[in-house]
Length: 219
Image 1 (cartoon, rainbow, N blue to C red):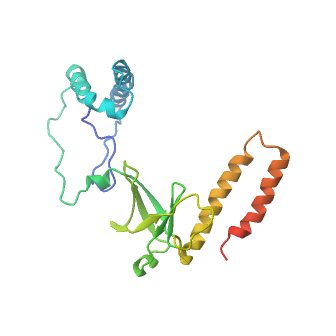
Image 2 (cartoon, rainbow, N blue to C red):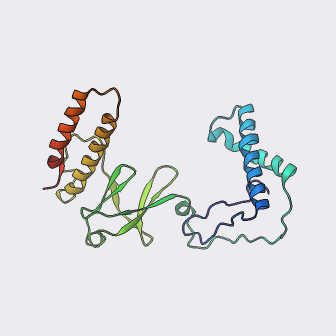
Image 3 (spheres, one colour):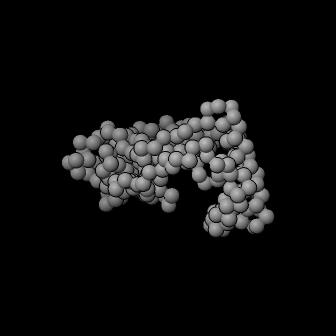
């Protein structure tokens, strides 16, 4: 098995599939290769003082060539099954983290403890309750799509003590209130789990939760 010759995962939309190691012999080869890489490569990086991906990247081709020269075996079938990219293949979209979320009635989407507000259009209103595919690129850029079409959305900024009507329109306030309430409940739960908190402080937190719930609920 040569380093760099195996694609262990199939990106969503690439029309490729994963070939699993099903026999004990194949599983053994995979585990031995993984063990070698996890041990040999890590030590090589440490010996060369390479401690981050940027510094390690130029060394990897040299390591792969040396590893393949010493350990690679010719394939049983020489046929190259790789195919060229199709005109519609977008690698920047395929190689992203993708999850599904639902659009709330307030045209908001929750993703990784963040709140995204969709543009209020006739087409977007028809998507209430629909499932969107949230894609996160390597640089952190988040994009939302339905049936391949990008939805215009903006990230609601965190840390607002008060809601600015110029930032969040009235029709989105229900979703923002629910988001704020969920964030506050998570913070309170984390504080209540602290062993350093006194009984009196816990009682105050519980009392605050009881008062805050109706205050943050819509309407």
